[in-house]
Length: 202
Length: 202
DNA sequence: TGCAAAATAGAACGGTCGTACTATTCTGTC
DNA sequence: GACAGAATAGTACGACCGTTCTATTTTGCA
Image (tube, rainbow over all chains, first blue to last red; front, side, top):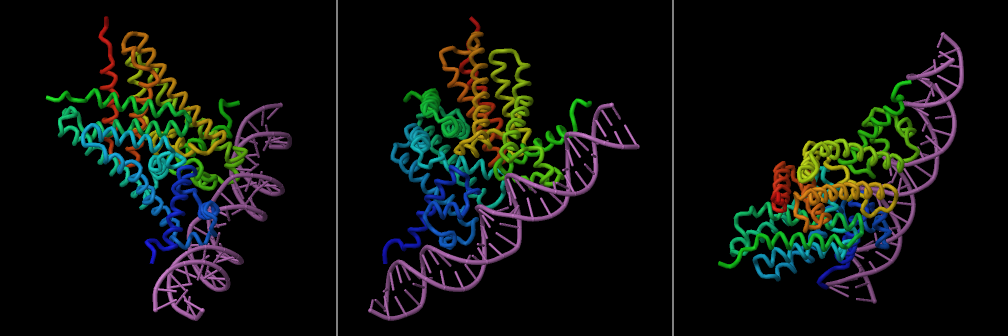
């Protein structure tokens, strides 16, 4: 038996397309028929991989989460703990938006706004993923503070909020205005904010 | 003849509901039937006010823009030019989100993400409104610099980007997490950023 | 190579969508 | 108070939605 059965391979291919299309057209309005057409499958053949559209949406969110980890979290983990890692997280977050890993920008930014006010498991999954990102960023800030690299008087949650806000704004404005300069703008703002809080080694 | 004919009154009531519902359900998926039900009208009766759904969407965006001006721009214009007005713009922007002028948060934040990748007049209208907000904020920053209240070495566009990012993040996170503390968080970050750039009167 | 099981396709369902057409009710002016 | 025109309602249409059921093809191990 191969490492991956054919069904699993197809399923992953579907979810890849689904996550991509969801950032362009939205997760809810992305129809089974549209997705089947985009993957060259029949509606029912595709549908059989998921019990329902709700399941498809949930699986798409999960898939996008693993892409995010792969593209942002994992590479940043290679940077040393401290300011370097905080910076790496922000930089890779912006890079993931800039490189258009998803054609419509950050999957979770789009999905969060779409499901803001639609209670249910899909919204919960999106919320949990974003909360987890924010708390990971906050944790990295705390590490930098514990290492004496960052001013410990600033609230870690507050700083994480600010850094994420800048990265998110770059993502959103690039999608809307199409000007890549926003990425530099966000990077510079983040770098300057971090520098302003850097502690000289005692 | 009255100042406003009955048709105009109805039309405005429809657009009020449409803008509100759009922030909850989205502008595209908000159907004519759904909106008719919400306003107690028949589908066709409502539809007759707009030649097409596209027209309805465009009218809704215009209506939301006038609400935004009324709730954010106009009150901020009462603050004196300079740092005070920059602060007032941000503070009212956050307040407009906090008070839930639209039940699903800032109309343009939701709409921008929804129409990011859907070319057409609706996307253009949303983009133009957001561009106009950003340039107005930038202009206020420039005024504060010209008045010698703000460090003139910082790029006005860059600072406007940062301030807007913080306000937008508060809007987004509140919608998703429901914790009002993000508004204080954004206000504090904005206030501290402005204070760090305040120039002592020469 | 054969064969059960997995994967995919086809056709059909009730429901809702945006829209067009026609009929009815309401408004405001003379 | 009548009457033209505006405002609203009723009905119907084709298209697509998610989903179900049944048939067909493909897969991978015995």
